Image 1: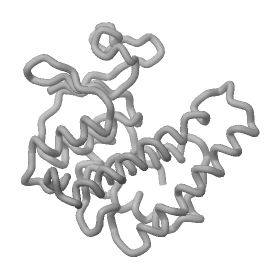
Image 2: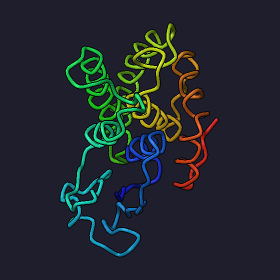
Image 3: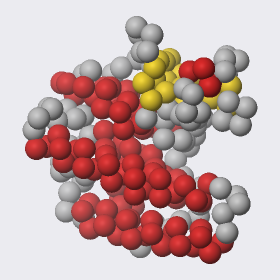
Image 4: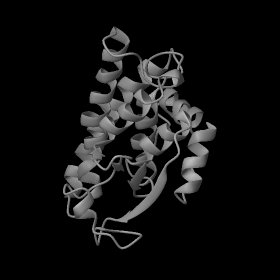
Length: 204
């Protein structure tokens, strides 16, 4: 399988999950400005949506959207416990977290990436994110990971998007449990390997 990625983008989540599951991946970096890959291919022909991640499967199709890809990877290696079994309440709780991360945290950062966003809107965006971080902080105060004691794909996704606070000067110190979660996930070998492979180093 081939993962089309951009360093530190949401494609980092499936990269981490694949390493956690022991799934070998070929990595192909995407230049998001020119929409070409490092081998010179047009990314538009791979994913017409124009953004990462995209996962090229062995039999030809391409799977997109981070939340779908990380479930696919986890389900391909059920013994890893990265996602509960389908049809269980635990799986629906995982889906609940994936929906929250995708819509409230991942997309919540959207205005901050646009240099044309007015300062007032950026400030309001950070306030909304702070409210979400407060909720996460409360949940993580009593357990190490989102669903309890086990690391799951939701934790890989949350780590990836919360790590964007380092790019936008957002201080996590008011949220000590979330901050501790980020450090806890960052210390995992799979995460260190993914960060190194993408040419990144974890911000303190």
